[in-house]
View 1 (tube, rainbow, N blue to C red):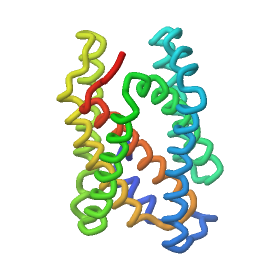
View 2 (cartoon, rainbow, N blue to C red):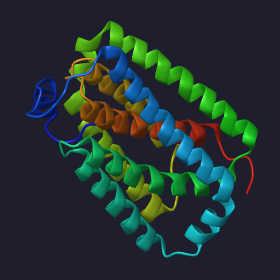
View 3 (cartoon, helix red, strand yellow):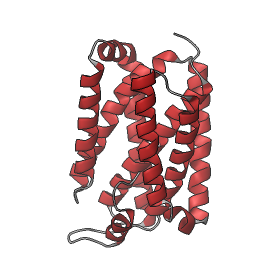
View 4 (cartoon, rainbow, N blue to C red):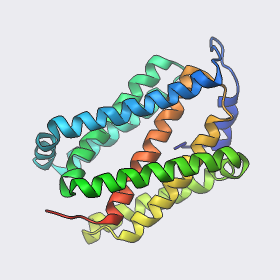
Length: 229
């Protein structure tokens, strides 16, 4: 999920920077896949090992304090990921994955395991479908950068207004979000196929894909509806 001037980001990623070492396409894809599995595995362990404890901890916090801390970590992680260093990018990846794991600990408490499994399966099918589509039609997806960015900003503002002013979150936002993040998966996978194949770029792009997939999963879960209190 690229932010800012997408054309500038794409131009920078296509060029090898000083000190970069290009790796093979196979190794590049393995790093992306490995980082995605690492992020999802970390979240799985957080939810299964201390999901209830984390949910109670978050429930006892001031919501505003939690939101500030969450966004502070995510923005710090994003800043580190943008640095030209695989080590800093990996650290930034963790600063994003850990707070998202806390959110999952809270959200998943409200769903039956069958609903969660169905959402995981649907997310996997959509993710694979849009990756294949982006491989076949990369030019189409690469043109969507700015449209997706501004669509996402509008979605976030709408969700926050609905949540804080009306104390509700319309399922229409979930459908819209699912569509945006599905397209973002295709966009970021198309970016991965046009960038210089370095370890740093692989980690950076895996972070974008990780955010796309997690957000898609949460939207699908919301569409399926809560099954318990």
